Length: 330
Ligand code: 8YV
Image (cartoon, rainbow, N blue to C red; front, top):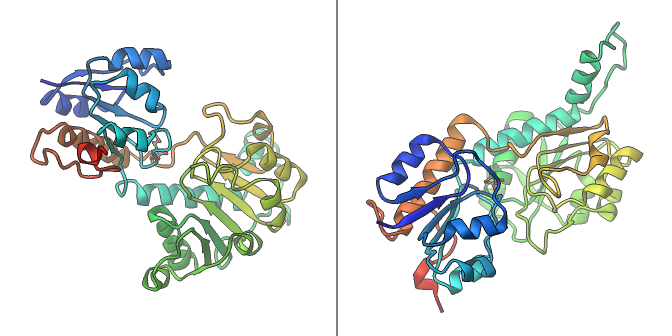
């Protein structure tokens, strides 16, 4: 029986399922292991069920030669060096699709909360400052009928566009490296524009682009300067896509109106400059965290691990691979 490591705490039913196929070592206290603790625990393991918190690179692979599958419970895999895994014939899998709608719901919620100043309003009320109605109390920006900008038009971007166009009568503009086929643009009523136009035209800009060297600080001081002073910015992509220090400055100076953030540089320690600002809605990387979606992500990651290690009904054919596994070894 192969041995596998589950690096973080996960649903007990998922551990039970894995135990039907493997000898499972897990992390009941949900400790965030150091790199050397992780390498130590991976010795003799054929597979790893990981999350976005663990970094898998060439050095780790060299130190863990028995590893044949790295299965992350996330759609994003910027923490995994896929090329290095492919070179060693190690499967990489992720959990796309199952989280698309839930993540889009949350992105929309953050965007609306930022536009309508929801966190600010709640803090005001809790502080006991609400004494009377007045005409310009906590006035925000409308979402319905406004221009929704989307940077990164993959599955989640399109799901957000659908909400905006069909539910809120928004005009949708987007920027993506590759333009969607006309039909797909038509389905969400979206218009491709270059990045500068996207920044200039958006009333509410939502970032859904994967993190890579290319998308690092894709939104910084220069980009924020192009946005409308009344605009909001929502980041549900990855910390690092936005230069958080530049964003904090822009929010403080009123160069944009508000932001909604679920992801940060240096998670779980957001830039302190963001914490004191009234015009930013902050959440702790929970966009995919609905009961049924987190369960579906864990099930899919487990199914990938089982199949990648040659077990179960899909032996050798993990449902959502990122690379070709052993057949991709040069
Ligand atoms: C995960 C995410 O919960 O799927 C992703 O890429 O950002 C989240 O849904 C997180 O990465 C932990 O694995």
